[in-house]
Image (cartoon, rainbow, N blue to C red; front, side):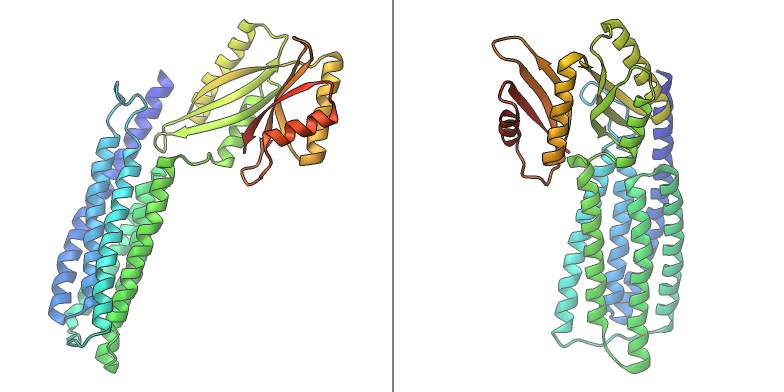
Length: 373
């Protein structure tokens, strides 16, 4: 209970940091939008106007982010026993869709300007002042969001930090467009507007990918899996660990399921006490709510030697590792049960492995379970 309370407290601090950063983004982006839109209309620049609406999308993103954090902070209930932390990802998903729509609209406007006659921009000194201030504000946003991300490791903060950093580049492009027209008379406004629009679309696609992946279910980070395995294997009586699955319900709210191998001679009570201790320690040290399944490993006499032969055969022929290997002598013929760890990209099937094992030793029946890794 204390570990859960600590995790909940840390999660709430994450949301508080995100909300404060989001409010800062709402206010600053609203001011930038108003200033740039005014300038864009006055100097007739599609690049500056596109950049203004880029800031509007950033402001909308901040609104959605703040709303997402507030919803994510709601405690677990009967309908949502794992909490509401995935609202973070939903908020990021909505933001990415908004960015894609705005980017597409202004790309259309920019291409129309490129291929049609139009009035050239009328650049004034105040345009440079506004754009310069905008670059400075975007730099401040990138710093605030970056610090927030380092403290929280929250996806919306990472997206906002990257977006603000790239916005500095986009605004610099808009300023360059105005400067080129004023100094050289070269009208590249539509081209720069298209470049900014393409950038908005690119950022939206990146954010869309980052937000959809955790909703679909990412593979667990190898570093975290390795740390978890190392922790479990450090306990006396643990013979192996496999089938590690980690489910994330927010950056600081995750559940892990593992299979822990213990000796078949271990008593049920002893195995229970061992796994119970591991679950408590993993929650305290790694912040994971662990659920462990106990697999008995039989290692005695001839069966143990035959099991070693099977492992060596599959390793040599297919470069495969196996687990949950057990041999039963009930029934007319002895039966070998095993789980084969097959890479995702491999076309090898359980039926092919079964056929190979039957040819290797026809005196046994084989039941192979595919464990894609």
